[in-house]
Length: 246
Image (cartoon, rainbow, N blue to C red; front, side):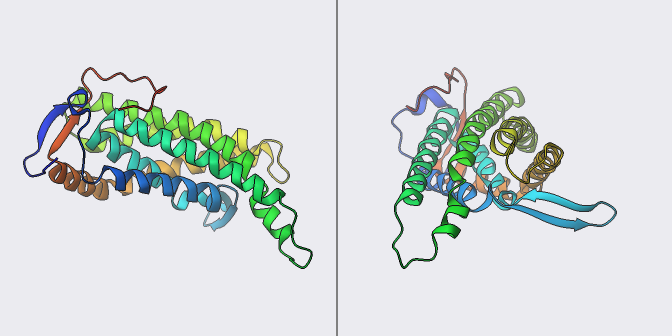
């Protein structure tokens, strides 16, 4: 697209259209998803909060919610079909990362290399966490994108904040309900009560992140719509999640 004037169009009318920034947004989406699974999901952190005491949380809260923010931007600017393509790209990339993590950990270490135990401690748990993460991510992100696209039609494109936050509540709720029990139930050092506390706190923090980043979302969405020259509405879109083609 050439940019300039923003035109409201149906997503189905944009098949085969090349966008300036779509590939870059997809790359950011996939990169954040991979980082959240490698650096954040497996670490349990803890803060001493006034009047509450010690409160555990997953370190992935620092950046995983950004994947939902970018997912909102993708759906709002480029439509559900292109957001769906990004979700599948992230899904496949994360599965490949999990496979290669298993292969690298399983390789026999050199006799004079002292880092195998530490390597196993960090990456040995990745396959289970990634299985939980990709399952939760797949369900939550598609729910997020679907709700946002439907709300855009209902609101006729007004009140962006209502659909970014509303879709995040649904998507992150589904994500949290799937991820934490699947990833940590029965794991050493993670009693059920603590899993429930972390799950509840993570959900609240993720939604709060989305709300706090609303001005940023408005800025990015406005910039991309102006540069791409379109405002996509998913009228007549096939909302099945089981395809990657636009």
